[in-house]
Length: 184
Image 1 (cartoon, rainbow, N blue to C red):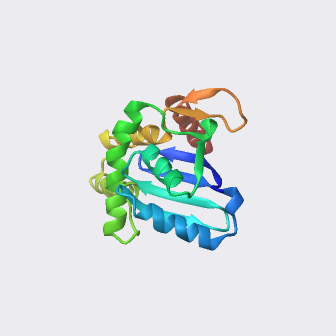
Image 2 (tube, rainbow, N blue to C red):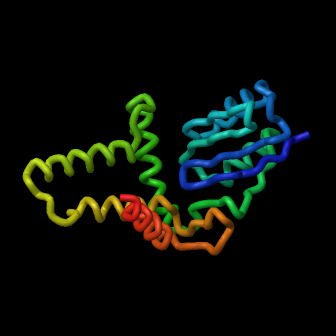
Image 3 (tube, one colour):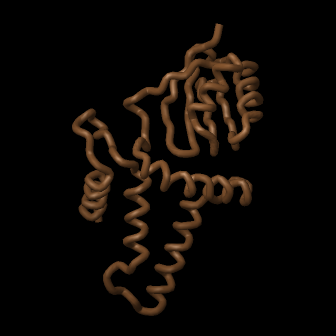
């Protein structure tokens, strides 16, 4: 019998699946890794028998991956609507190239750096350079870009941790910025 699975997290280029009924079965998860890696467009598959989780990094259509898994008898997946992130076409279209670039950077550096890590280093370098020049004025253009990236990475809608109302990513980023300023 084909086990049921839940897609617990999905964004452009990344999907996390849980197969609770096969938790603790290393042979099953080894087969899943091997089989999914053979699918064109799947870059990396990491399965953890202890948690029953499967992480799939891909450049393919997520629906094609789920269909392939079902066709090969690996699992039948359902998406948990409440935990789905991404969601808007614009976010997915803009996010896919960044995810792809980040995966290529990780592959090139042997998993020691990714796009966000390189951005942090670049922004810190620019900041140190500005301080060395004596420029202590208001935030420069790179700060605006950094905030824009932070808002973009939050996704289109963020659920309140207490189950309250949904917020746009801009509202959530505003709250986080206000909390950061208060904590200083």
